[in-house]
Amino acid sequence: MIETRVLKGYRAVPVNGYITVVPILRDTDNAGLTLAAPKESGWGKVQSASDPAFPTGTIVGCPPVSPNSIIDHEGNVLVIMHSKDVKLILNEL
Amino acid sequence: MLRPAPDHTTIRGTAFFDFVDDYHVSTTGEIVALPEDIRYNGLLLENLPFLNHKNFLIETSAPWLTDIELSIGDKVFFRYIENTEKNEVYLGGERFLIMPYTSIICVYSPEIKPVNGRILLSMIDSDSDFMGKRPTLMAGIVRYAGMPNIHYLSGHQGDGIQFAAGQKVLFKYANVTLLEHPDFQILDEQFYVIQDRDVQALLYEQTTP
Image 1: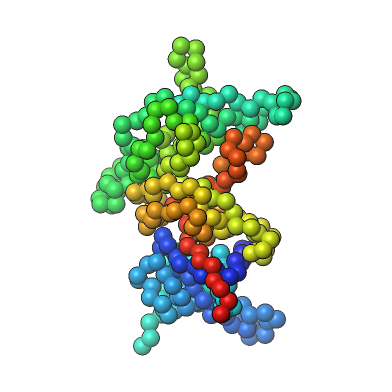
Image 2: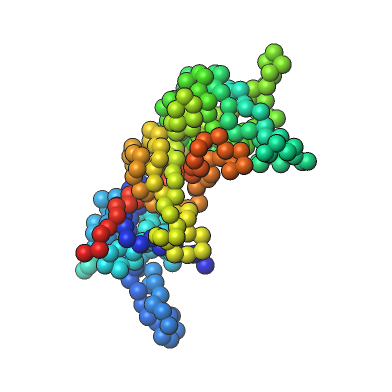
């Protein structure tokens, strides 16, 4: 299990190909059982990016890891990850 | 090529009983000779991806392309792993070390100047800002920043951003190292070392609305 490290009270502007993602949380596991705490679904919404291929609001599939995280002033947990680690991008039909 | 400082054989006046390489070897020295250029094949590999002998080109290349910023007489920190017998040469009975330019971390005299795209950081205070078991190795304040590297062989290319002293940054945990061992510190302050490509984000303090 990868430890999540959280930093509070800062606004992060990604550089060097990194992006900040708001994880989309789910409250059940694969068997449909309710978990005590929300769990990351493996999907997230791009909040800001240094890579123009990832505009704000894009839904991306990301690996089930929790790298560096930051909590903004609104209480959102943002995961910082490299754009090369994005597995796929969801486009609306 | 550089003239290494003597290895650390005493601590606070007491001699060591045994010698552990990564603890006792000197990591500082004075530059006595410099290369004219750095052999770098990354741009060739990028432009000609189907080239034969690709592995040979990777093995014989520097890991990144950078400008040569050092001068003869500069006193520098280098990676401890380079202070070994295989890098030794003796000229007139004096011991010198030959090592790749990319193993030099920073100049500390006449002034502190990181090279090879490196950045010297101090950590943001952990008690007030962090949660978690290993909280301190994640965000820091840039104290000294060198020129960014031009290109990286690994493909994890940085944006070529010139960081400035005082900027707060979030960085990749895995790549941070301590510049000096606290027992043999030369500089007044303890610095952590990262490279320009390890920076993930610039941090701006946010006031609660």
